[in-house]
Image (cartoon, rainbow, N blue to C red):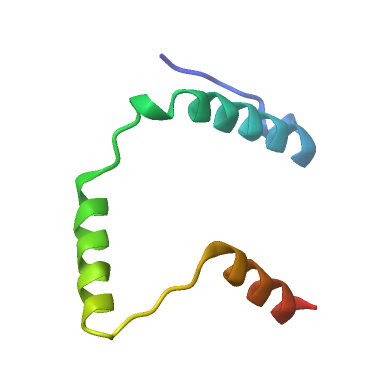
Length: 72
């Protein structure tokens, strides 16, 4: 299927609304989306680095607070 949108004629707001509609639809069908194989490899490498103490992570709420504080 080929879909053609008049992107050169659309405003930024219209393009964002289209993207949001697509994202909402994909989110409703997330169980049908298979992640690419390389995601598993990257996650395994990250988990191993965390085990070795080479990487750290923080919970999402802490990360959001830190990021907001860095731009204020």
